[in-house]
Amino acid sequence: MDKDIRISHAEFNEQAMRIFFPLLREFRNEAKAIERNGSENIFQLLRARYVNVLKQRLERSAGSLLDQCKTAQSQGLLRNGFSERISYYLKEFTRNSESF
Image (cartoon, rainbow, N blue to C red):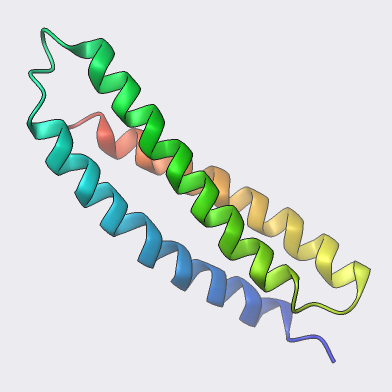
């Protein structure tokens, strides 16, 4: 039997936060070493690399939870929900990185 969709969403959010915050801290530490005024392009490339890593890790996490679903309907609902949450985390990463 499929796990309750709400539980899967909660598990994903928990995993996503364990991915998001350490990666944001790591990015912040690397970004501090960059003189942003003179190296904006380097900063943008660094941020793009971290956003890509975040996306890959979140998609992997979502995929492992989707694999546990047995019905196509549950998978469809979760896939949509996970996609929205992944977009949210990517936007938050970008928004938070602006202050570095």
